[in-house]
Amino acid sequence: MKKRKLRFHVIVTDISKNKMLYLMAIPVIAYYAIFHYGPMYGLQIAFKDFSPAQGITGSPWLGFQHFSDFFNGYYFWRLIRNTVLINIYELVFGFPAPIILALLLNELRHQLFKRFVQTISYLPHFISIVVVVGMMVDFFARDGIVNQLLVFFGVESVAFMREPGWFRTLFVSSGIWQGVGWGTIIYLAAMSTIDPSLYEASKMDGAGRFKQVVHITLPGIMPTIAILFILNMGSMLTVGSEKVLLMYNPQTYETADVISTYVYRKGILESNYGYTAAVGLFNAVISFLLIVGANSFSKRISDNKLW
Image 1 (cartoon, rainbow, N blue to C red):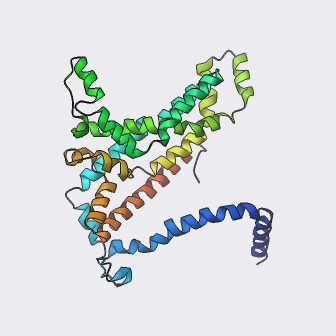
Image 2 (cartoon, rainbow, N blue to C red):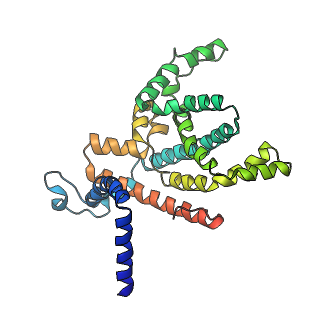
Image 3 (spheres, rainbow, N blue to C red):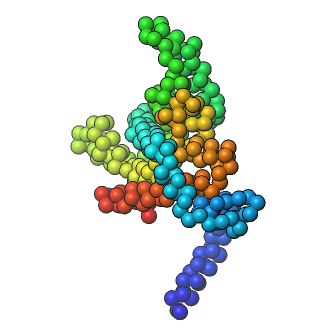
């Protein structure tokens, strides 16, 4: 009883000392409570034959029927394969890209040139996805600049946007171009916290720039890399539907159709809300298990962990 009173007193004291910080946190807490935790009440429609007329509580119970239909569906393995492969490509090629760029920027000694490169690399982040896909459609069209260059060098033109084999490459590479500069911000901030005396000591020991990067800079930002890697693992079954919807067409469904676009077609276009809720719940559970597994793995091989 005394321990509870002591804890309550500590909490009250902390709130009174930092009341402005808690007031600033209220909008964020309210956002997550209203738009993230509140809608979880509706997850029960994943187990029901949901009808808007009957409501959530009035719709008949189906149990795991929706899950069974999805697992045994014709498109199940295609959706899983496409979603996982796109995320693996983004993890292999997209995740290291801002780290490499941040390391290169950190080695620049001409501050004016460094700021110029940073500004140029940040700009694509502020371009709308609709505009980016529009640029891709123009550049990779049959009469676009890319095919004109291919023809100029004697290579046959390719219908990039209609070829299933090119979808993942275009999707991932355009994402890297758009986000690599913005992604360097957090790594450059982490590098700024590294003690400069470590570099001075390494110079006295005869270490060159490359060895300084390998033995000082990379270990210094490794906690940041580990946290972001764990968070990325949590989205392994999540691919933003907006960009895929803008890029894909019936000719590229074979490699472009992912879980989020399937949910859009089934839920919005066909109004099959219970089924799509089941697919979304399956996606969320797998993502949760992946992030827990990645955190446990990081915790075992190092001291870097999310919790």
